[in-house]
Length: 445
Image: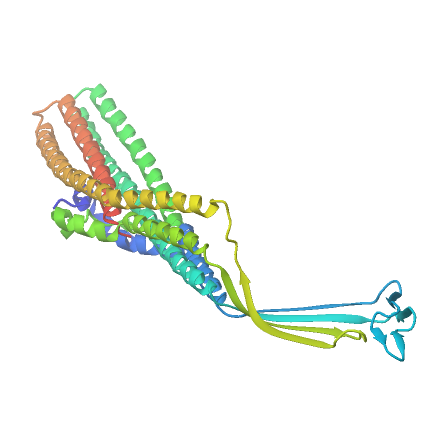
């Protein structure tokens, strides 16, 4: 399979011997390593991970409602006005031989001092445990949804890295072609200069060669700057120092999924988060219906209460009670029924979406499989075309050296080679874009 390293062949073969004395090339950053680095530092991935933690704590919070609930309250204060309790004559009764009790209206003035009312209760839900269990099941579905959303964010981050890596590869291919063209034109300028001294060419030929070499030099500078800018942006995407230097790996070999459509389909159906999300949404919609039906059940709880009147002489000091607390709302005028019907419709919609999700994934993976296959074939074809134009240029330059070809012929072939290099760079760009889309369709991180 054709690799991106083929594009570097011209540069490597044409470099002068002094290149060996230069510093070692920067380390190769493979696409897999770049993705691993981004998944550790990307902000969107971190946000998705926090959503998972929130969902887990929401489930734990709901589970705590199954345990008894304890309440305590203390009301303490002093009356601003003195209170009077009047017991009317005969309010207690009329005793034979004694008379009415009390014998007359009895005015009791309560002294103003600090009093307190202490209340405490413990309530253990009973019938509510069923609804709490339904809620916890739905909350666990929420956890699974958060996990799938995290997977989706990780896959989107990986796709962004693949796209950016492909843009770097395209720019690198263009830069290598421009530098190769510059070296060839520089050599032609030197050869034409010598032939001008021999009066074998016109001065205009030399000026034309120098103009072409100047344009090639400018193009190489522009591409070199663009490459550096994209490298800095790529380092930022990976969450590392933007000054970190690196080189790119060749075009990757075709994986098993790229060679076998059925294997690609199977992997996509297993890994695509859209399918799992749709299934979880359907399950959640069914749970919503069950929870709403559970609202018809009454609330039954065991309650233990304690009440104390501190520093109040005429009231009992301690009251303790235990019993059942029953709450029920039997008449809602059809409100629950209509809510259940709405939730049933939502559940049917979720089921339709879940069924269709698999078909959409298959269509997507089939299309991306074909695009990637076409992109690889295009790279092979454009590489062969570039090699042919390069060989033609070598032949014409040999003929030019022995005065058997014109300057115009050399420039024309140089332009043809530049066009072939440009087409190859575009093909490489298309390949990396297709590669990123294919791995996204597979559901890979």
